[in-house]
Amino acid sequence: MRAAVYKGPRSVEVEEIPTPTAGPGQVLIEVSHCGICGSDLHFVVEGWSRPGSVHGHEYSGTVVEVGPSVSSIQVGDRVVGGPGRRCGTCKPCRSGQTNVCVEHNITGASPETGAFAPYKALAADAAFTIPASLDLRTAALSEPVAVALRGVRRSGLQPGDRALVTGAGPIGTLTVAVLRALGVEDITVSEPHARRRELAASLGAATCVPADLVAPVMPMEIVAAPFDAAIECSGRADAMEAALSQLAKGGVLVLSGTGMVRPHLEAIRIIVNELTVTGSAEYTNDDFQSAIDLLASGALPTSLLIEQADIPLNGIVDAMDRLVAGDLPGKVMVNPRA
Image 1 (spheres, rainbow, N blue to C red):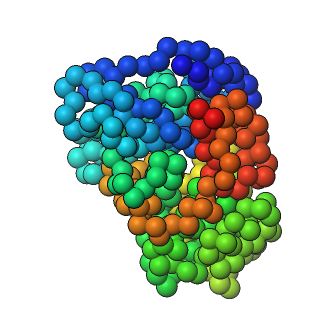
Image 2 (image 1 turned 90 degrees about the horizontal axis):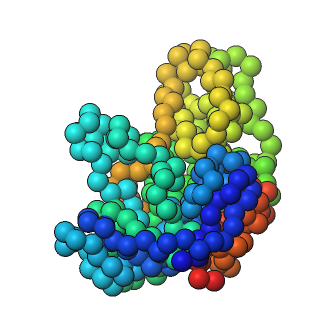
């Protein structure tokens, strides 16, 4: 089969590789669409990946082969690839935090062949069936919606609260959409790119600002209009620091975006205002199923969240460059047969 194979920083070539088969406990799906994730940008554009890798983990498709000992999934089922079973025995798993299972690899970083290809083999317990009302292209949003939903749940935001979202890339805009779907209306978005701000506003963000957020001089001081929680989606160290400075007493900062530059978080501000700083790592099975249900409900404006044009395998690097530049504000879908 033809697959997008990583060669080096900003270098992906479409090559013939063996078509996978469904082994014991696995199913093989014919990939319909696969979204480009922020982690894919790190791996491909920034060169974090290993040559020979095939990325893509936000995918949907139809089951075409079922491996031995699989009874829960049948040929013809329409599915999305989700988290699947974890070890079940470590302390996080026993407490329901399967997303931080000690045996779990980071999504997108494992050596398995991803879905920037026409076929993808996966564990049967990682195949989530989708309702008939949900088309496969939209269903490919399930994974990033689950990421956004996890961050919102970690924030504790409720209707009537004030929310700050820093970074309006795909996860940031999905976070805005999820917040609105859950009844949170007072949302401010901080994002330097004009097209991304426009998208965030169309999704229902009450305020979109391009400028840096101004921090109070002293750590015990609170800004004039503080936020109950901030969800940081850019992965930028300066955005993490700025978001912390905008919180109300007892506020929550959720770190959802990933980046390698370490922030300097103002410890005294955290102490005197009893702030909570927490991470949001991927999603649990419950988060993932809730994301599918939310998409199927029609509560998310998916026509705004997904870029209109599909991208072929040989257009992945160009699309990634445009995502980094902010020229493509929505979720980009790769169609391996386009």
